[in-house]
Image 1 (cartoon, rainbow, N blue to C red):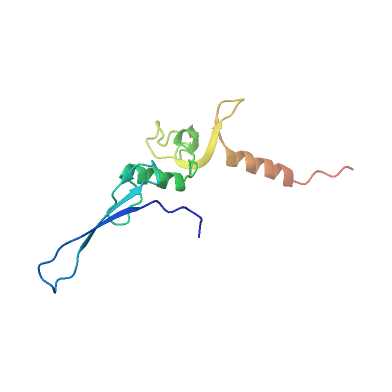
Image 2: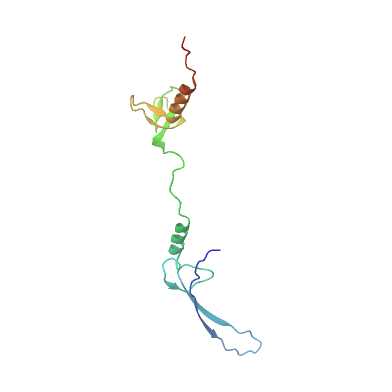
Length: 139
């Protein structure tokens, strides 16, 4: 359990007079609470802790603060390959020549030397293959 302070409550009870001796007494209790978010006093209904839905939503957002991280790369950073003409495109999902949908190769960017779209997977596999190839033996 956390050590959070309970909101201050002020109560006022008003008994009701009865004409029938068998009727149960009714008590009206006026409760005022202080909003946990903005500090204003309000009369709650039910289990309300906040004076308005705006304060409730603000408090929820502060409790569930998560960084905004994109799950997958944006379309303009993705390399696509046309299956018919074998042409690569950066951010274009449909081949303008063949009018067919391209397959996704993965995230990438234009090559700094030739300006052709290059996928990151191509660079990783090329580097890995270059490291794993055996060197020729000196005679």
